[in-house]
Image (cartoon, rainbow, N blue to C red; front, side, top):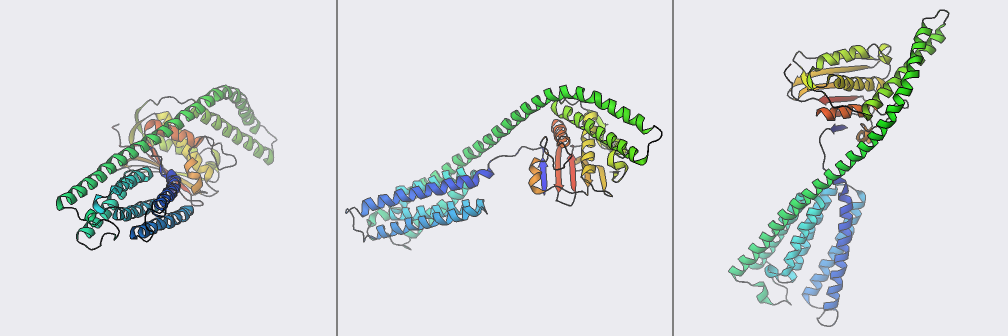
Length: 435
């Protein structure tokens, strides 16, 4: 499973099944109305029910009802939704071709239904749907006109023969106008649908950003007050434990308890720092920074703290090429520290965490690789959400800080992971900058 963050995504594809469901219902309603009209015209005594057009019309609408039922059954499975949408559009154009054949051929007013399918296709999948409908409609209409002109198929026996035998000039006019209308409707509907979908996606993203900013503002007010109140007694606790550990007469159990208190005090201090960084971010002060040097220092510090001292190895790797970028030194250090700390916490005893810096075609890339529990596919979309965590002792703040710092610097984060097989976090920092 791979998750890519840093670029905006167009929202819209998850709504396709819902739009297909509405389309299926609308098709059923249309078929019912059309069948009622056929019944009122032909079965009301004005026309003989033995007419060929009546039989063909009833057969066409009957096929429409069957296809609608098939669409509904396939839609319930939720598979190959885009292919199902394209198939519906093509078969709709085939159905309209049958109606065009029964109502006058090339000169039939029912050719406007081809444009209706273009509008439906645009509503479903944008320009792609409009194009599928326009191309399939043009092919069906062209095939019908050619077959009638060459007498490969004969007009309905109960329809005026002259209606199906236009002059070459009239035939050229009908074909040109109908195909031109199809192209115009396709371009207008497809372009408008794509722009509306993009605008809708941008609106959703802007709303989410506003909501996130409001939550962060509230968190900032809370964390500013708590940070001072927590850090003062926390410093006293940590200092007292340090003095207690140097006292004589402590047995191994007492020393172990002191280590637990010290470790938990450090973890609480990290949590307070992360909350302050997340809730009250400052604008980065950009300057040339050697990423390899910062990463080496972070690895050295991580190797002397927490579980990295006892049962998890933190290793640094780097190529010989320069790895300078424009960044805020302190925030870049915080980003690396949070990624390394997250990797160590996800690792089991005896595992290793590898931190590497490289400069190549992708620019300067920081990679943090662990061999821990990995990340399940269902958890990936929320991985960088504030306060989302999969660990019993996790806070869900560290990776949120990473995402905020990366966004403010214009970095991209790629995450590749499978449950039980560790995780790889790659931060793409752009092209190398001069020192």
